[in-house]
Image 1 (cartoon, rainbow, N blue to C red):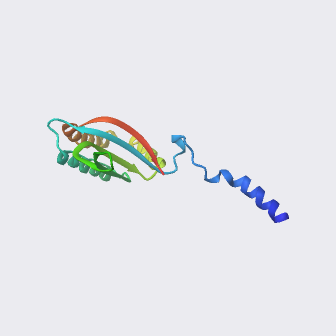
Image 2: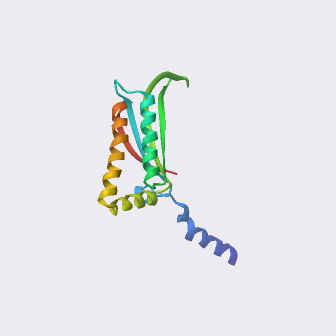
Image 3: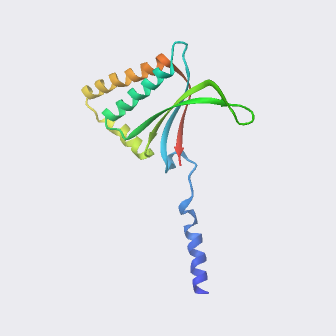
Length: 145
């Protein structure tokens, strides 16, 4: 009886240990910046892919632990098929955690002016490449569990 009593209170006491917060600040998974875009009239998938490579190189150069993933989106047909025509593009910037992203942002604040200018030049280059090829229609942040 004593063991049953102990087990009962243990389950009640630790029941919240594995609950998942629905608050963004409680994200225990990967932190993702998610961008959905349409190709511009002069844009191309190749140009968008080049922009994501520049984006990844930017983060690699500046010591961020993050992965940039390009994706192509297609519409589903009724019955489960897929339309051949490209619907939209997307880019996922996946951080190991919210804490890792916050650490990156803190490092930016402590950069020298010289480094900040160099970084801004590289940032502007990949953003310009994206803008040549795509127009962002939605931006979201995800907590990927």
